[in-house]
Structures are given as structure tokens and as C-alpha cells.
Image (cartoon, rainbow, N blue to C red; front, top):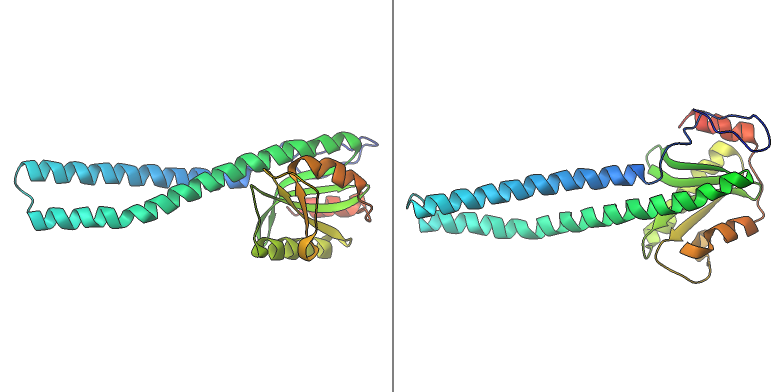
Length: 217
């Protein structure tokens, strides 16, 4: 597995075919399976209740109890369905951002997707070029304070591994406007990302240091 830099034959042990959004898509599929299993169980319970009620084998009290259980479970099912929709939307947004960032490879940038980070889950994207190193997380519409804290923490860990400043970035997929910087994290709307990255002037990481990092992910 290798990535060829445009200027020379340098290689690094990172699979450039790794698709962006893979980790989030896996979470969405997991939730989808649980939803289908829950729906099947729900239909089976209702079917048994109806069969027993028609055959006069189920008392009114027992029927009421089963019905109450089904009603009580509905809010949990709704929340799980909402979670699935959220994860699915996140996967599509990450994939879109990843394809956009891949355009930078033609300019000599190294772009990595779905990079696992110990005790942090994963990093959506890392972009490293002549303008510096950027850790990019994707959010659909908005971010919370905890997202800012996590982004700064993840960028700090990357700094410790790479030895250069890593800029934490949150990219809003469905928002427009100008980039801004709350609490040390850049929030960059959808259409501004590539131009904003090209305009930065930070210290780049030596390729060999980035390659050693890639060997460990």
C-alpha cells in the first residue's frame, strides 16, 4: 500500500484507497441491523398477541401488559432510529469532504481518511501539505462545545507524534459563510475548505516523520 508524491518516488505505508467515512458508515450499518431486528421482534410480538387474543387464550390483563411494554419501548426505538439517521448523514458528509480533500493530492498534499487514534475513536481526515498539517472533523449542521474540546485534544496528540503544529478544524457540511475560530478551533463552512487550506501558512511536517506516523495507523 503506497502513495506516490508528485515530486518524487517517496512512499508511505498508508492505503490511499481507504474511502472516507468508512468508520461512520460501519456504525450506521450496525444500528440499521439492530433496527431491523427490533422491528422483526415487534411484528412477531404483535402477531402472537393477535393470534392468542383471537383464540381467547390471552387474558385482557396479559394483553394490556404486553401492549404497555410495546408502548414503553417505542421512545427507545425512536431514539435509535434517529441515531441511525444521524450516523448515516455523517457518513455521507465525511465521504463528500474526503473526496473534496483528495483534490489536494494533485498539488502534492498527503490526505488520510479514517485514522484511528487511541482512546479517541477516529480522526475523519488529516491533510498535510506545504501549508502545514490539519486535523479535520466533519459535522453536518452544527457543533457543540465538547466537539471543540475533542478536536483540540486530538490535534494536540497529533502534534506530539509529528513534532509540528497541527491545526484543528471542524468542517460544517451544510453551512455557508466565512471561517471563524472559536476557542482555538477553526470552523470552516462547506465551500471554503480548499481555499482556506491553501491560504494557511504553517510549518509543514517532514515527509519521513509523516511516513513513520502512517506506519503505525
